[in-house]
Length: 202
Image: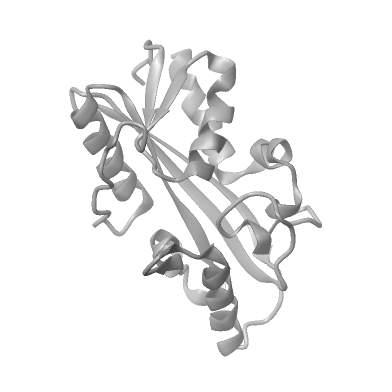
């Protein structure tokens, strides 16, 4: 594994919530974080059908454009009774002409489960893949997941994305009912980061 030895890392996301979460997770390592939006980078087309494929597209595009090491995340929720959907298309399910609407996406997801008369509990998992790319084309891949179930109606006002309908295994609250600190101890992204931080020590 290649060691990260710089003091500045570009996070290849335009999602403010995701940038905030990643910045908090990196805080203990003394790395200055800059987001793709701050660097006026365009969002590349995510044309792959896997989390790792799309994360690689974003990380390498950002690194090539800036000459900085770039960290990209591709993540989503997989629902068992929907055959793993929305999966890599999680953000697409939230797209509207005026931006992403995750309340609409959650309503759509629950309706799809209802249409199948899927039995409870409706098992699901959040998946996250992190790719760190360097300007020379090298990359390292880190993956994490957290198992749980969908709940309805939505609960909680914290977090972002599908957090209000996802209750992690072994807990009676959704991610959106937890503080950022609580969620960051167990989330799919936190699990991927637990592997990722080895690059500061490798």
